Length: 353
Image (tube, rainbow, N blue to C red; front, side, top):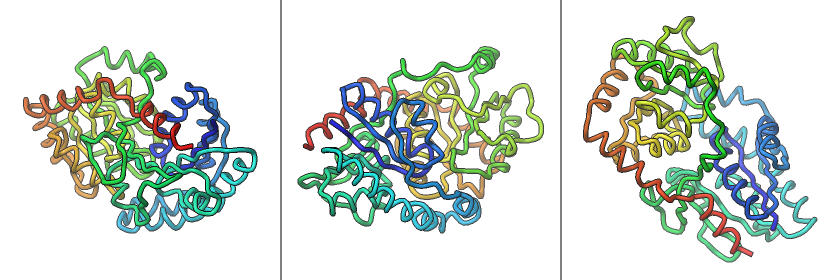
């Protein structure tokens, strides 16, 4: 069977689909992935055929996210999602001419819905978070040739007409090991706190400066994760190390806490690792994700424009010292035992045709 995957956005919007694509491939299916042009190398490295459906500069979106998050969603819609619609439909039509196929697409893939409506191709609409379901103004019920899947567990959020499968994560054996310098740093002292603003945030200078000061106040070791070295303070103490990328699935279980933007993939890794999380949610589903972490007892949040060393230190101090938070984190982590979100997605899409 042939499956077409369509999604645009941040790297966090692509990674869960790569996990599902790998699970489908292991079942003997062919998978072709369409996404941002900038992700071509990543997708091809994973061994999948790739098609670009959006390749415009993110500059205007980046500046809006940093300066006016309330307008950022409109910018993402108008500058990314709408322009990607026609190429997505063309991508699906091209493969449909070659033979039957089924489409797995992000809920925001307007072109996939056009292809379903106009060409009759079976479509599985995928929501990566509960907040995405609420944001979908064109949410459709399950019907012949269409299915809604929530790539999150029911205990994190439920919606009528959306089948929750659990978070899609690679099998541990498929996750690359941590590099030697990261292993050396982890072995050199107490578990550090991870600070990462997410791949979509390209203006994080204040975040890292305030995080540095918060660590100094608490005497914490830390790992700063960002591909943008220019966002970091000019110098870091020996107790803090910068890495452009480390697999959170390997790193988070060996750390004390996770401070991040509230993206659903990062939330899931923190939950699986069983560590406290401090979120700085900015836009779209991030505030909803942060609220769900708080409801589970595993997280706190600070508005990005209010993120200061003193407040961050206070919230980290409280969570790290709380036995209740520790127990809630352990309880959440235990829910991941025997979870196979990608496998459940495969079960659902294999029965669509």
